[in-house]
Image (cartoon, rainbow, N blue to C red; front, side, top):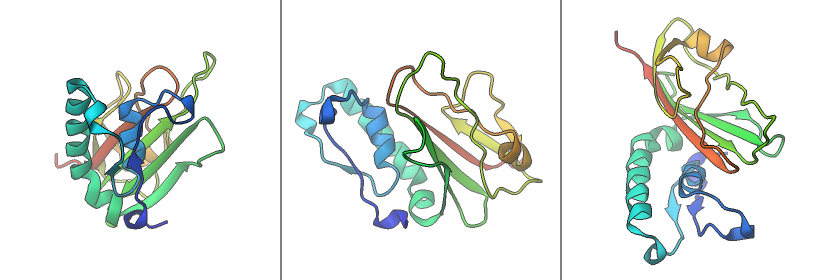
Length: 168
């Protein structure tokens, strides 16, 4: 799939009676060319501010999503959680979008093992990381040990983590 040709959009949250957070809907739409098909006149000031922030975040990652390499870290439809990694061709920067569709009290989130990183480089991580998660990890650690994004409690939660080679 070429992300440039994928045009998902942010729609109203009552589709199929599921309670999708605005954040989840935006993160889903960020999997391609972000579009908004919801009635913005029905959003309150808090939702509009959140949307502005998410659009600004998308503008930062858009070149990587639209022009980079895509790796499915968790296949869609096979489990309650899915994740996609987008990365620049040279592996110097990337973004991970992770989604949780259901909430189970027995469910422990598993680590996401990134792909095709430069194993000898240190990466700076930013975004939705679990509490206590290191901000710097080697490419080898991210591929073998993995990444644990922080997601909201409840069904239909999402996380976005950016990474780039650290200039230390």
